[in-house]
Image (tube, rainbow, N blue to C red; front, side, top):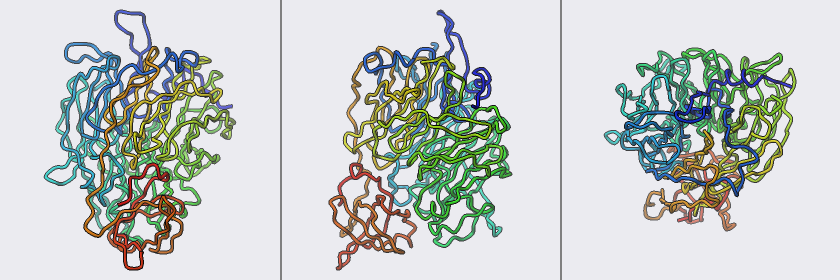
Length: 622
């Protein structure tokens, strides 16, 4: 079995900052300064001394505080302890919203200590193809990152500036939330394989993946909006020097082909909000999504679609690449490998100490050699994953990987000198119908028996009231310890990539217009504010219709679909393709089609978008 002592693991993961509580008994406090706790993206807080399997239950644990926020939260909360703000010392939770607001909130009381706004967000109707796979507006979409030694929070805002979308990278003081240096408007260019230059275009680029800070450099990944404007949108990884926000001399343009069969590029970095990862040497890891739906545009040198990649820290050199053998089918079906993130395990014993794990929409978890991504140790079926894995060590010091797929949470034991996984437990009760999978985190008091808990937030099961639930699961047995409503996500056509954060005996869940704080002694039944509902649909021109349906057959631009009531409708998608307002549908999956019906009853679609695969997520046809 692959083992590493607890002390060595904490050093290798490198997320924990230990402080003493003034005026009381000495007690370890953990700062959560980046997505999923550390640059490996393990999601493991190994310094949780309060919450255990025996004291987290529906009768002893519950809601303590609810904090009102000004918009939907897609970013994971971050936490810094013993911060001095407005003359007082606080443990502070930092939360960023899609309204481009950043909050500093007292982590115990829920008091808002500071709030700043970084500019007008971009409304959904100014996005390509009227993309509504977000909240009513897009502002801060990704998880920021904190450097406690510099006293700084780094965040990317999406701003409508002179009616043109633009991204800005900010360096904010932890104690004032004021900019410490002049914000930088993000720009970049890449050379395509024909020698021509492709310029970064903010209006067709969504910045969803969590930010990475490694060896004095900041990194961000960019994707698309609903696969619309795929003739223009190409995935990027960009970097900046931390101290000055100066862009790196090199960047990574993931699709450098000058042409594609359907004028459809992408190869986006979105990963359901999961953060870009980095190893101790500073290499940067990420996973890409789909490209041209012909399935013929992949290239190791020119278009790294459907792939896990390792880049040098200066982004000048591609060091490693893993592409599943069925990548052509993944592109055909829009089955993004990059719907999930890549996790780097802490160093393991055995012949292969550096291991990576990643899974995507097709529900296969790949166990890879992080030093040579071409080496695949094995693959494991987990069901569809808009998600990312977690890692911890059990009471024997054995490595465990936590995955989610569908509505199931699985715990796997890492074994052998040639690494393999054996499933140890499974819990099938995580509610959610919006997308398969969910995001987890793990808390434990080191490797002390009876302290490991896996935390998860499910996704909505309907579009009204669209609540989401917090779960605590015993990974040793696969049994539920606790579950309760923890927030709301009325934007059911989007993605609720909520990561529960555990710190100092408290659990934080950020959702739509609220942060909820759970702990021992909390109420058994959450009392949450009224859920807001925003109809994010443009008024249709006279004579135009919008339908939601499941795809039953496709041949070229001809689609046969079945509406929620069973009615069969024929769709001609040729105009949508020509207008680059076409997100490739897949058999058995949901779509949104807008257009006009001809005399034969066929819908001549000018827009085709993805819909969720559960009709309970759909608004009414019109």
